[in-house]
Length: 255
Image 1 (cartoon, helix red, strand yellow):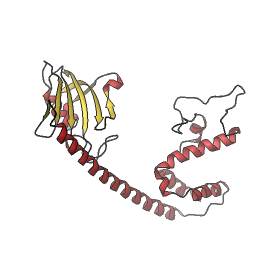
Image 2: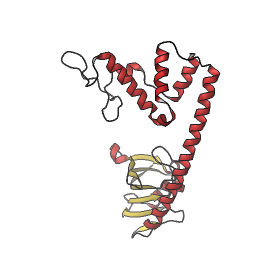
Image 3: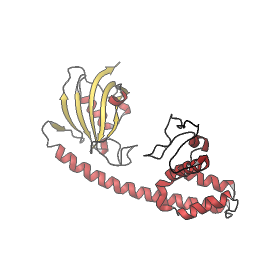
Image 4: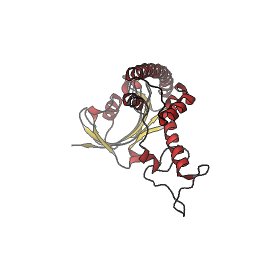
């Protein structure tokens, strides 16, 4: 079997280098190597793992475990028996000959199908998130103390400061916590142990508008609709069309 074919497959499923796998212990809950840790050894100098006798079995299982973790995201798309057959036949140099063109054609078609599937799932999630956000913001806007601006931004004053208000191009220093509507925290300067500093014209529109409402020393709660946040595509842990909640303390305007 040609190297190009193996490279094409490796581009879809990244398997950790064997040296990295072999020298790191596996977390029992996640099945992944524990970063920064060395494998525990017994008094005799060997690794003792229940159900796995000897280094050969242990290495084999750990490599298979890592491959399984990498394949989980496409587990419904593969046939495990055929996968096992391919591994066995490749190790014995008896693998079916597949040309580079055949391999690339199959993988390209598979990639296109998976991309279309992911796009459809994202669109469905975007509809769900948009409906959830619309319902939440409609109810939230009726709460005592919650103000809604013309853009759709909602805010509540927790503490009103007495300092200056930043302009659209100001650089500010803030402490904040960002959560999804279900209360899950996706970002927090408090957790990092230090405030964030940034220019207002470099953040999402909801932050730009919300921070300009605040005086230095203020603490507000902001509810940012997707149109003023990360929109239809989302970003990282923020899904498509998700509304966001922030607690923000404006500490200073940085000259």
